[in-house]
Image (cartoon, rainbow, N blue to C red; front, top):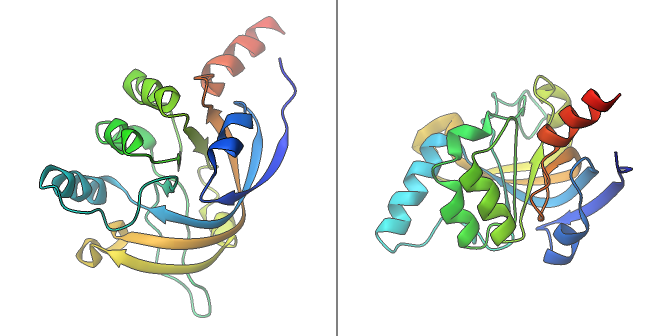
Length: 187
């Protein structure tokens, strides 16, 4: 099994940074990312179908599949753990083809999403499920920018500092969920 690396990367993520990442690498993201889950993805696709602009420039940006709990006093956001990514699979290839740079979630992705990741030199990260309270400490700002009526599923712009994620699917299509199983079997 290849040795993994640790990277500190600025978001939005550059194509140069995406290309150097390999599945299994640990990444600490700092900068701006966006949240969107099922309902927000559905609305974004409706906007695309009507040739309307998306609520943010998708090019190079990363979407975190997350709906936070209410913020405690003095905090910008509540618990911020990842949502199961496969729920967004029917929307993801379109967003990747429009230039989305990355996604953060948990769980496996469809073959169509993996092909779109490779075709667009993008990256799929996993955040640790069940660690939402800890992950929220890496979020320094949170602002609802679209679909406020969706509550926790509204689109948010987040400012993050050293948000820990793991590269699951890299721009070459290497998939940690597959390679880790193979490595385990070889031991």
